[in-house]
Image (tube, rainbow, N blue to C red; front, top):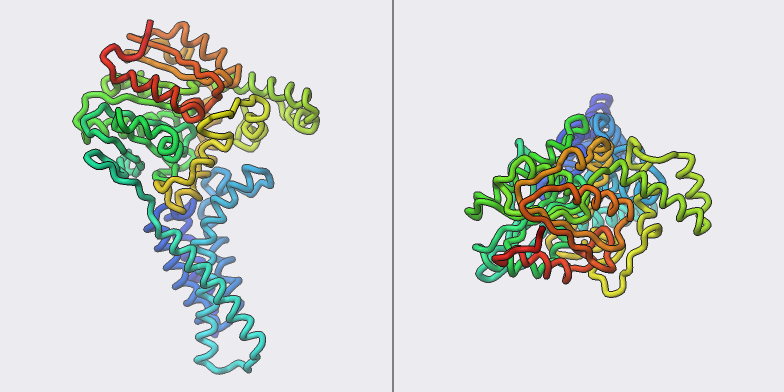
Length: 480
């Protein structure tokens, strides 16, 4: 009896230790998700059968969860840290522990129930209680039905519509032993290759590019990269101690080389947005032989100075509009830089209010990347993992505070083009203008799109695509 109970407790503990090492931020692919469900169900069945008690329905998930949490203590990020009862905190909780729980704790619970029930029936050692037993069976049956739905959902892969005579595929790039995901689409395989880099570490703009920039597929082979930790690059998360900007640059260079080789190009065009411009600009500076041009949208110049300016403007807006609690909280906290994403949350979540954008006729609303989840290129599991960017942002962003391109990048060896929305955060525009005036490049140009903000390429896609398509013309984009 004692040995059976010990084995019943040990099995979920051992599975938890392994899962915490194998998928520390939860299963991120169809394969890992289905294995997690299958193994959790089997471990639950074993725990229930060995214990012969429905208490295993509680004990097995609890033991597993404790083992996972202890195993991944080395990690950092909103999806694995202690929960925060804020907007971003709830999103991180659902995307992290919520998804992980559905794929592991739920099958453990269901398996334990059926294992205990089967063992008790075989032993025939318990008196019959018809009503409680009927209620229990209904409850477990409903949980099993939920598990079946979750499993089917996790098994559905992302897909992309074919392009007759062209290319439409998902691709994988190896970077230092980690797999990075790409979506590649274009009507003409011989067209110039255009690589799109999303903003935050762990970010993805597959949905936004497919919804708003599909017109580019007629003029370019468009490759959209999910940065390490993004939905299609989930397994490429780094340990926090090892995550540096140079790693992101190395990833981008690996992707660029992969595209050059796949399509037989000497050089490719690079479009980087927001935080992606940090790695993008440095990759172009260090490896100009890989790139035909660089396009920075919402170009970063100095995160520290931009955030301090945004902080002052946001506090003033909060006081002016009667948001006294927000203003007091931010004033007590002081200006950035901060050490984690929770301190930055007031800036992030109030940007749309403090710096409003004219959305009339816009392609994208204020929900940004989250509002573009409806495309079939995202599987259900990848949609849930879109918030994985919070972990990458939390780890990498504080490490970029000393970066200042006014000192670090004063010259580029390739044509450099930039796009901003006229309603971008003013402090960012001021810094960009100062840096752009001193930047030397073979050609350069700056497009300012009216009635657009930080995500100008998606908010006003017609203006952006019409301008960008001129990269293909003999004269190219204007420059000075």
